[in-house]
Picture 1 (cartoon, rainbow, N blue to C red):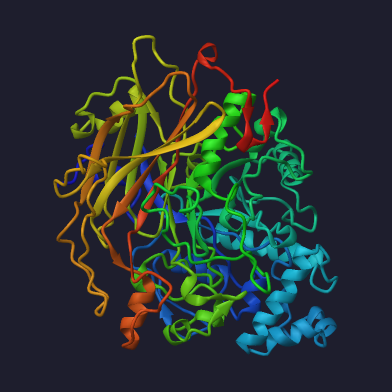
Picture 2 (picture 1 turned 120 degrees about the vertical axis):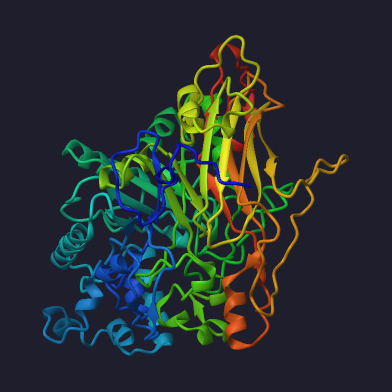
Length: 623
């Protein structure tokens, strides 16, 4: 299928690495990384990473960089438009100073058992050091040796300076940020914190200051009161043991109106996929979703030994989005008004999002093909083959500047992918014409007649019967063709969450089964032995205008898009081919890469809503 020109020029597609023109009022897409660690993160350093923020920025821009843990030169196939380094606030940059014999810290800490393990160069001892550092974090008992505020303040100042040095407005953007690493009892509540300016805070807020999200929001408000613009992004709900999107606050009290109004003021998005798996949904939560099992190998809570499996309920994004509209119905506010992003969480300084270009994410532990395929490589008890390749985030913004990228994420006009640079547009309105997406004026008409992803539908006109959604997807030229576009709808009915998946556009003129309504599989061209595939199936581009056939104006609802590629080899299959062995058991040899849009929400006129007597999934009872 021929590529649609969209706004009338290739620039409107947001090609990475292109030269900047003037701001595009219809927005370009800019691809980047919002979750990355360098040697300044204590766990990265403990696992052998010595690559710096400077290395990370240069790699993202397309330079070939030497990876210290393998000695290999690594390079992205397609440069990014922007990147944020989010080193852990806790112990930030302390451990690199321990390798400097002239530093005062090294003189004080040379006999510390953790320091000795880190400096041994032995991956096994590095893993032991990582585990001991994690204990200090989960128990909120930092060693005074490692938690030196003066050192952390100086490291942060240098990190900000590095970000500003690499910022090239119009060509390459750096966002200033850090990770707040709350992990009570090994339950992941991590957030990445981002600033719009070129300074950020004087010092990052860490979990040692407080491990409660509500206290993080208080600190963020203090930054706003001081004139700064700041937001947070949550990640790895799949490893939160049901805490990330729980129906209760940190004190164990049920979510109330104040909480539901406050959380989205500070938390604008959530990371739907990264190397530790996808947090969209799980087969046990979405049994009718035939694609829910994607990248679900990572199975236990971080740092648990023996491994502990986490709770599924309240750990996944789809469930949270649907519960959010339940809260909107019950309380009048939605605590989970979240945009969608994706990322790496690589602890190497490198965000290599291409399956065929994967080089590991955890220092010495998985630095080479041989170590990854050995079966012995583990990070915190999890086999190296269970980690996925990094995801990528697309931001729709008028230009590639720090302010525009920040504002694009804050407004939730974002989407996440499992790695490929799939381009995705999603709009909602009440009177889109069926042929809207076929017009050169598609984007202008979609903005004018509705809202983009991340927003609320306008109030329903009296004569409107149901909302329509315009969706368009274009393949990554270096990845697989597109299989289908799906719209996932969630709503509450009689106090219970509901979901339904609609295939709305697909390739190869397939026809849904007349009995089940299911679309036949697209096929599979992957040659596993040679780790290759052919783009002889699927389409380059898919687009449609879809009207909800099951719309009920009295029900709050949320809609988001999932785009699927045809099957292609997983990174572990490429590694197996390089070694001349069979792909590892326990992980899929082929995968269907994908993209997820931010949602569009529908809120009915209050006079149409009939509250349920109880909302069991929200642990709420109506008055």
